[in-house]
Image 1 (cartoon, rainbow over the protein chains, first blue to last red):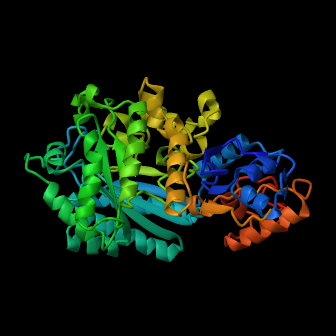
Image 2 (image 1 turned 90 degrees about the horizontal axis):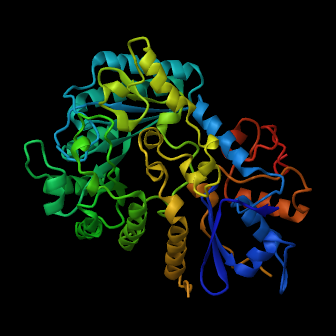
Image 3 (image 1 turned 135 degrees about the horizontal axis):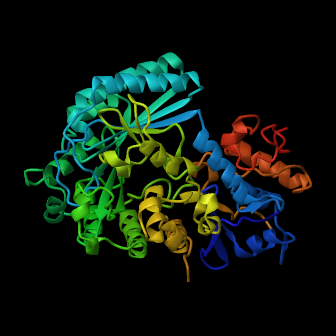
Length: 445
Length: 73
């Protein structure tokens, strides 16, 4: 056996190391001498490394047989997930209208809701996938603001759930919403529509949030959104996304404190999202958002570390650890059968393109044009395995090439990459340190 | 030395359904380690990797999906 190329090894107290493996996402803490010995002949100063320890390291992916080419296995995992007919992800922009006017939004708004014809076409598409062996359907309700089209959302949900029951595939859904319309009754409707999770934006304390996430009329939104979050956690798995730019980077920890004050500690997750300067659509608000306000990838990577600590302090980290989980593909945009659909049946590959008709890759109702075909080819052919930097990057298993949209449109390579490329060691060390402290073990000296 | 001080902070299958099961045959590891792997997989409640299930559950796929991992044959 040999050590995985995707191990990140950090100190975990006197004589101990923490091992994180990107391929499995496992984290194991063990005695340093036994880790050293397990990579060699298996002999420590006091005897042999036990078969159980070696088994832990194998199952955790930290040790792999010498003949294994991990990069090739990741490639096969990527290819299989990309072309899989077993699972399908559909993002439905139920409305391209929005009641908010966020200055950094990357979407050009079109005040139209999901049409009956688009719902019909989507149901037909999913039915076709069911005939091809579909096992899992996941729908993300997106916008604009999807709750502007609640009736249409609920109607299509009912049809897809019925189809899932008839055809025997599983159905799940989540929603990306600004939270303003997320009342108790809407939460009940969403639960009935099998929506289990909601991502809601809070960009700071009231004086900051209300500037960055106002209603179109300019009126404030903080109090109502926060009140709705307090209600929503009884119905949905809520994650609060704090969109971070230079304007509000000091606000993240205050958001954590405010959530704690509202009794939400440990009842939701909170994480920072990097505001980027998406300028591919000149009609989108983000085209006018000052590039000087955007944190660079390395600045954000540093910020992210502090944000994780702030979130961890009130038990609001994402996932089992706050560390990134392994992925098979970077996002829905590169998976062959996944769709991002607008209200009128326009198809995009990427969430960042929604609302930009010049970037569409097709339609549920019309033949694909030559321009759309060319646009779609980029996503179909995107692969991290043709990229020398990706092939040599330790973050590859959790990133799989990162943001394909940025890869296409940004001149800054770092905009494409996961911040884990930059801050992986610090994040694993912080996580292991936090764990060993909370477990009563000593932390790093 | 005992392995009692080994401490899983995140078990592999908590983060991703893929596991690192890459044992082709007993030339990769000793029979004792292979048995320990099998026991651990059972404790983790991970289903045997074979046939098309391997694609989701095993990143190694050395057996091309024929269940030849040596642990679950």
